Length: 103
Image 1: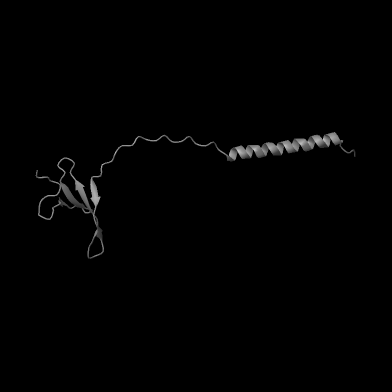
Image 2: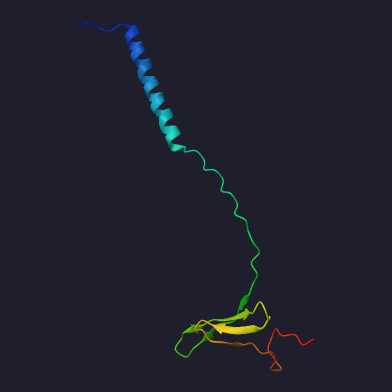
């Protein structure tokens, strides 16, 4: 059996090295996906605070009821509202409705 020439061995080695380099480059490009475009900022609008959270109430059986202060945007009258749906006008220390100005 005849031994291959040195030129044939060199060409086969170069072809194998090129194939390995091409596969390595293809794997590198596949692993590095293009960066996504930055998201456009959505227009923002001012949010008016229309309620405040008060301290929770604990019932005798351990249930928690949370209270909120809602302000009527037209009359500025403040109302107490809870998680169970209860609602009443909020009164100040003199028994007047809070949020109403008398002057």
